[in-house]
Image (cartoon, rainbow, N blue to C red; front, side, top):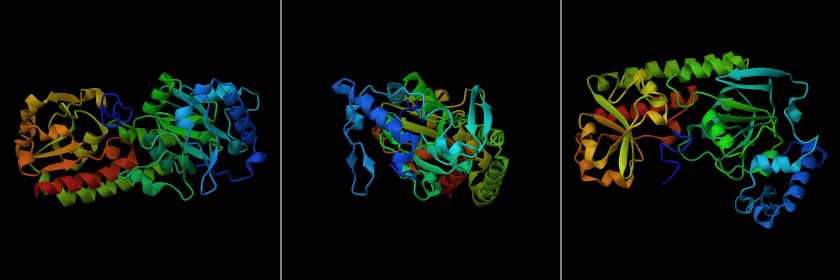
Length: 373
C-alpha cells in the first residue's frame, strides 16, 4: 500500500548544504564534527556513509538513508551530547528577540524574526513558512503539482532524506534558527522518536486539514505578530473566490458533486475537510458532506467496489488517484458521471492547507466545474 495515497495512514492525508559563512567558524561546525564522531562509535549497522562531494561542490550523504538505519534525528543529536551544541535559540536569532507562541496545546519560544528557516514538510509546514514571510533556506523536494514550488525563494536547498526519514546532518548543515512543521508530521516524528527540538526551535502549525483553515491562518499568524500577512492572503482568496463564482456559478446550480478517492479495493468520499470547505465556498452542492464529523482523513466514508452505486447521483466526481486500478471496476465504469467524462483529478497537494492552498484550490475547482458545461 502506498502511504502517499492511503488516507488512513499517511500523515499528509490522515495521515543541500549552503552556509552563509565559513562553516569552520560556526558553532554548528563543531556540532557536526561531534555528530560524525559519535556516529563512528556506533555499531556498523547504524553508521552513516562518509560525506561525498557533489559535482556542484555541496555535501551529499548518499549512504545516509541506508547506513543510519534506526539512528534517528533525535538519537544522533543525543549522541552528540555537549553543552554548546545547537540549542533552543539558533545563531541567527541572537539579538532579534523572541515571541511566546501558543496554539492548540503547542507552546514554544520562537525567534521573532528568524533568518534561516527549514520547512520539514512540503505542505502545511512549507505553506505557513511562506505565508509568514520567513526566509526559507531549505526543505524537502517540492514535487510536480505542488503550487508552493513557485513560492520558494532563490537559493532554496533540498534536504537529503525525506519526510519519513529525516537526515540529521542535512538539517544541521543548514544552520537553522527555526524549524516549521505541520502538526500531523510533528505527531508522526514524536511517535517514532525521529525528531526533537534540540536543533532549533520548532513551530508546529495546526489546522492543515481543517475546514476552519481561515481561522487557523489568521490566528496563528497574528500570534506571531504577522497579522498583515494573514490579511493580505485572505483578501487575495476572497478576490479570487468572487471571480471564480462569476466564472462557474451558473454551471454549478442544481448539480451534485462528490469529492472522492480510489485505492483498490475500495473508494472513499470526503465528508468534512479543508477541500470541501473551499468547494462549498465556491457554491458546490456536495454529496456526503457532514459537518458533524470530525474533520480530516478519519472522517472519510469508505465503499467497496460492490457499493459504488452511491456515486450514481453525482453530476461531477472529483477523484484522488484517478488512475488507480480500482477505477477499472465495472461498477465504477458504469456510473453516469464516469460515462459522461465528468471525472476531474484531485491534486494531492491541494487536499490540505491554509490560505495559499485554498486560493490555488479555487483554480482547480473552476477547471473541474467546467466539465459540467
